[in-house]
Length: 405
Image (cartoon, rainbow, N blue to C red):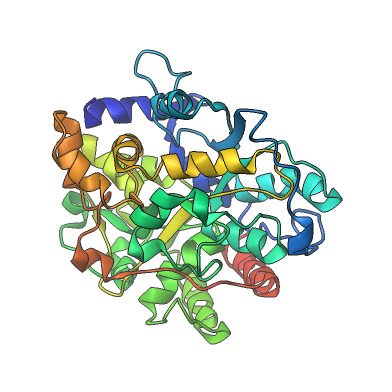
């Protein structure tokens, strides 16, 4: 399957407008940028480790209920209801997958699963995929079960070193990356007329009114702090204050065209936006139609993030969920998935599989640094430190005032 065909199939239409999967993944930040535990209307409540497990029915019930984001898995080119890698999992293990694309927003899903978790009831899901910053909440609250690493040999062997020790789960005891991506900057080379190398290049006067920033604070903050010279692995309130002050001045000068979700892609594609914060996978899609669009990991660095697989408390098929996780760390399977979604693959060994493939599209994907970052790019990628509920609430309140929410 060629990359062009992959992209043609990884779009969908909402209200008559074509959008990509990333609009669902983080695009809700445009309308729910201040999503905190309080915004969900639920109190935080820690679940003790001893109370997280349920009766595992995996041996008797050969099913796994898998909740994911829209368009975040391979699709059969002849039948969009089928997912070849899931069918291969069932063929190999005998475990049937009840697959649901029910996750449209991190906070929304938090609110959806909250009643069952807090009541100590079986949640109706065995494997879920959510973003790094929301994983911080789930792990912090004890809403996910500790994984049995004996069931995850391929994960242990094949997980990229750069993804092994996130702040919220330093030993990957509760989470396994599904796919990863990079937050950097994108720009239209033809319109800008020069190379952009720094986050601060976005604030050049000649880009006034043609620049966008992510509306969700947890999506925007890391790159903005990197641009101010902060270490996002250890940043303090003072580093956030610098970002807030900078952004308020830019808003006052009308430098920022808008604060966006995933919808920035349409503006970048049609030329309304000259430069912006961007996700690596989005730009890979846009470049197929417009080679003038460039993605850059800024010289100050970019944010490396993941969406992660987890097993929620009391899930009835934990062992089956772990089998699913491990299956996707087979380099052959990881290659199939990465070739379709074209985000950063968490399995470096999949690159060799792609390079040796008979499929020209697979071989091309093997050389794509937005799927397999090279050593130089990897050295500039950083993960954001774990944040607290109080920090998130305070920052998002200030951020909401700046961007007009």
